[in-house]
Image 1 (cartoon, helix red, strand yellow):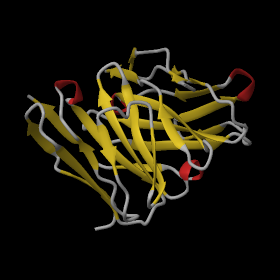
Image 2 (cartoon, rainbow over the protein chains, first blue to last red; image 1 turned 120 degrees about the horizontal axis):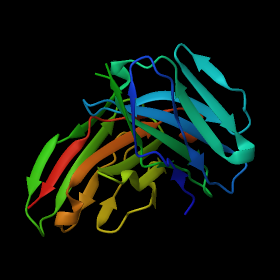
Image 3 (tube, each protein chain N blue to C red; image 1 turned 30 degrees about the vertical axis):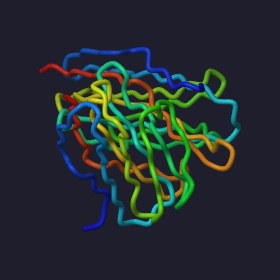
Length: 116
Length: 113
């Protein structure tokens, strides 16, 4: 199976520190999409960003930034100047069109704790 | 209200019983997905559907059955519930597969006793 790997199970930082969450994906497809989702303690899943395989331009949105590198099959997520409200589980996901259909596979998640 | 809703939110059932989790979306999204979330495993794909009457297995399909007779509904049935199926189940929908983000329901917490 083509996997999505988030090697960091848990990360704990102190408020205002920068933190990077790692994501490595596997795929045999040339067309695919990558996502980051956030799951706060309340339990809902919140979409953060989507990238397609043809767009390696990195993006910054406020305190969030993403680094997509096809050469290393990585799609890392950085929070600058972390805040307590950033505490959540963060999931990386990959979508591919498998045959006539497609599937959206998630990594196991990284639990981020930001302490005041 | 527009969105994706799951029912019930909480369910306790006995081993061996059949139970159906409902998922309804109002956007007419083509793609729908069912996941289970367990500690240490993240979100694992059970089944997905690219359109009405088209379904396919995900990573952990054993013990589950799905159908999609209408675009807006994607029920998940546990034919004979087992304790290992105790989990939080999430349904999601997406307009165009990976070309758009998936929207998730609130989740159903299922306990099999």
